[in-house]
Image (tube, rainbow, N blue to C red; front, top):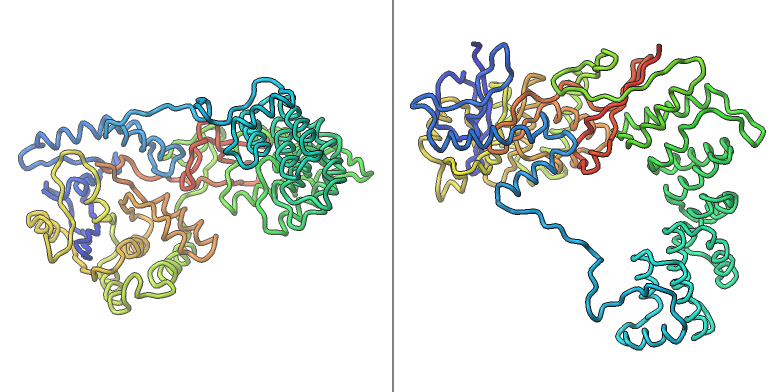
Length: 557
């Protein structure tokens, strides 16, 4: 069995230690730390047990619980749905049962409730008198009708009552009635509301204009929607998307792509529904212009490159539109298939081609090391995280001892919940120190570096891992989102996330078994194939730091 070297950082009131000795015998190191083990030719990582006297009863209990929970965890903490599963496991550990409550359905005495049928003016008047505490009864009731998805006839009877009582309808009341019509699909009512509001008020604010655009875009009034879009001072991406979809449905391709370019020039991110509407087969433009196959194809491939560069994943509906568009291209013989890729492999199981490696290039490594130093460690004010003197000592420390194979976030690991097993406590040095036996074993296997109490440990961990090369992984429950946000540009943040997914292991009472993923989860192409990770129905709970597990494989025969 080959010797395995671990480098670990354990912070003890600002102390770090880097382990760089072969793990050959058992130890009483922190339970979490000795979950890292020796590596042989058949496996990457294995959990270890104490070998000096055999596993203790406590340790066997922890091992059993860890083993039972293994199947709940994907191979990477960055896999879609992992955060939700970890939360479910934590609730089970704490004995907390899920509570299922229905919101908004319970009727309570004295609360404003929507009528189940249209009311006469007299009935509305009685209902209003029973809620004298409401300052604006008609507005409050229309809000209730909107939220409860009441029948349109009920809302109309309310408008009749208000018009009878006051002789007019306020802008706010009409706005809420408009929202009810648009949100509940009563588009046939919207033109009348539009005429009333246009004739009664000097201008429409953005909220009303947006609702009219959405409704008109769904009907034959798309030209009116386009006019309203031009009246808005700063249209939203949703406004653009509604009109673009309408133009595409009515064959106005040139106008649709003009608006799309305007949206992109404004620095806005299109909605996925907008992209889905654009991924349509090439058709004859009703404006008399023919959109060429090449021009259409280049525009749509540009959308895929935009997704790649901004690490955007299409939802399942958009993925189906992309697949249908590729397969409709005349004479190109594209075939799309749905698949998933094992985290430890780099080959697509459908076509057998290699996916892009998760490992960074030499240039990306150098860029990331430089930016982590300037943006994360030094930052605008170096004294908020360390001191120039301390940083100089640490850089020399890493230079003399790197590369490391594993870097462990000691403070983060030590504070992990590992059931009833023995834990070392990390507190201030001037109060209670680490367990002497643990510290003795750490010093036997580690190079120790002590930082000031005010210094942050995560930037040092990142620095040491980055300067140890592609073979180094680090163990921490901290997903480094604040440090990622400290990076000044989107490109560097994307490179950081790529490196993180390929090198971070997460501790949850034990080290997650298996190595990190070997391929990059990003839209990618090799010319005669495209591989597109997408969010399926099961990925609706995916957090921003997780990546999809399903792929669309497109190949050209």
